Image 1: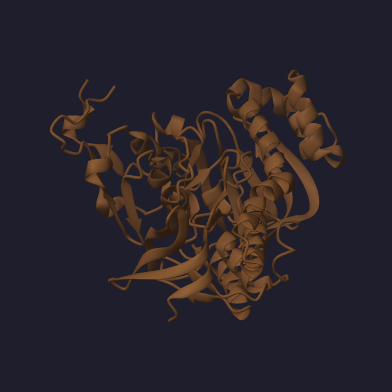
Image 2: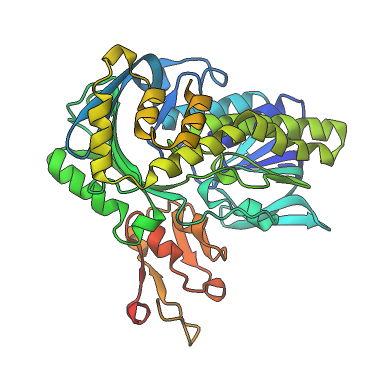
Amino acid sequence: MKDNFDVIVVGAGPAGSVAARFAAEQGVSVLMLEKDRDVGYPVRCGEAISKKGIEDFIPMDEKWIAAKISKFSLNAPNGSEVVIEFGDAGFILERRIFDYELAKIAANKGALILTRAYVNGLLFDEDKVSGVKYEYQGEQREVRGKIIIGADGVESRIGRWAGLETFTHFRDMECCVQVTASNINIDPNTLYFYFGKYVAPGGYFWVFPKAGRSANIGLGISGMEGKKKSALHYLNNFMEKNFPDAPILTSIAGGVPSTTTLKKISAPGIMLAGDAAHQVNPLSGGGIASGMIGGSIAGRIAGESVKLNNQNHILTYDKIWHERIGKRHEIYNRLKNGVYNFDDEKFNKIAHSFLKIPVNKRTLGKLFTTALFNNPPLLIDIAKVFI
Amino acid sequence: MYRQAKTGKLLIDILHGKCDFCGCCVGVCPEDAIELKEAEIFIIDPRCTNCAKCVWSCPIEVIKFNKEGVLV
């Protein structure tokens, strides 16, 4: 293998693969390094995504669709269920196939992919990042790159080593645990959400359908709540109560940096994308769509910078991201903080009020308006993102 | 408050057999004191300040204070 590339991407999740593809499309040489032996596995994700979030990046294919989603079911602590219908809103993915397909597209555009390649340090030319050190099958190696894209997920160590402030405050870390279980009798087109201090304090519990009567069942809670009881504790309680005999196919832990984008996501020789840049929607915790957008912008700019031989060009990434998505995430973050401390009684009241709205007039915007009617600044924010 | 390490001995333990290698702890560690490979994890001893953020963030109760660390 060559010992230098124009662009090196660290991490082959959706953000990394899309970044590698968009860089390769510019005709520059691209290497993508993945620490695990498989792209797309293990899946640390609830796998829900909106239709809009996906169509720009991959042609529709049934093989990575585990369920088609048209309804939300939001469940208050007292058992009141609010259903919102959306038409064809989105999907539950089969991410072990989806991620693999995204990586294949990058490879077909010319990117080289190396799995089992654990990046453990950066190379520098004076202050500029100029390559990575990595362990490959027990052997320590180095490879030089003009631009390194850190798409290394929630750990985000690549950015740290480059001098960017990437660590997540534990209050903002949604600590998640999930099982995929079978024999789950739920509507195959509905996403179920559960709220309240007994199911997922300061977060939410989800039951997302997958093909063949299986489902992703899990929750995320803030590290602040994790101080008292772990996510696992709440998962075990919920399973015992609701699905005591369901066979478990997989169980997985994961962390989601649920906050606004990092203050700085590029510096000379380095760009960050996806969870590593905190490009997650802080309200929903969804990061596939926004990570792919981040990756596409980063990859394109990296390719252009190499072609222009202008390292300063990569610094435009921060602004372009902020204008396109970052600003919106700031609003979502304010909404998250607005609903974060609701107690069970408040959730019950919201459900009670919202149920008076006829089913065909219910929207997420109206739900948030109901929830935050006595918080005028946030009502303006709701109007900006939902209406 | 947790007692700080006086001897330089680690007060935080990772129960290796239980770890899922998810990266939550790495993401919240202010000192970059946790090394995480595909299926291998360890605390980088000299960097750890026993701040406990990894303990609180672990979704599956894998990182714990050892006996010396739960005092006070």
